[in-house]
Image (cartoon, rainbow, N blue to C red; front, side, top):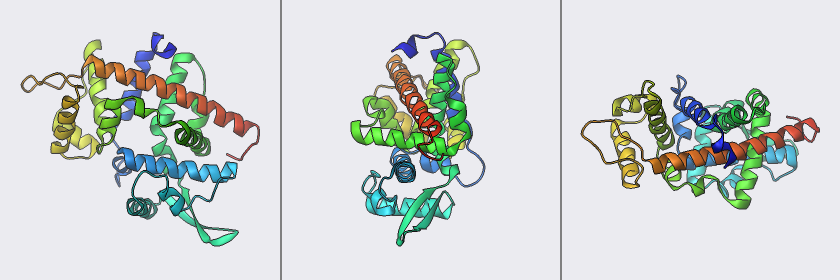
Length: 277
């Protein structure tokens, strides 16, 4: 793919990884909640349904509609939404034209957390191509929410981007599995460039990503079984295989292209007054 062939590509992937492994903000662990694929996907669909209703005349974004598309069971979806509401990450509002209908409105803070990786991929695309798609998306949660809606619509029509990347997909299913994967990839790049390595001790990773040390070990064990890590050598840091690096770079390239196109579309719709962002 053309993005990977650019001399700037790998450095933008490094920068993306650095952003994704930043310590979580202090306070209630919203990042930990969303760093698991099923819960992330549910929040993603919640945001997409709200902006589809707000900007495009889609069906009312209520709990029953989300339960039909969230990927979790109805009970899990209801419990997840109750958690989000309790932490002011969504607001449950009555529809003005029908008070019996309860809208799930995502808070800007939820949109920005769910869209953190999406916006970072747009920034990476800008760094490779010289475009300037990321700043409006980063500054306006409404534009970011619209971009997520456009992506969710495409996902429902043609499937997820991540489905084509089996090791990335598998790791994302575990609590904080994706940031653990990113930490491994970042260490690979830092090792090759001679820079300080990211600490891969179980205690350091458990502290950073708010999971247990045994969970870190289990995730690494599953990745090793999947062929993503070279055989263990004593107490040395785990080392990723070239196959995993290739898959991760192809994943990043696909996500950069996906979200850059949608960022442009969201901005075009906003500029044409198609909706009020």
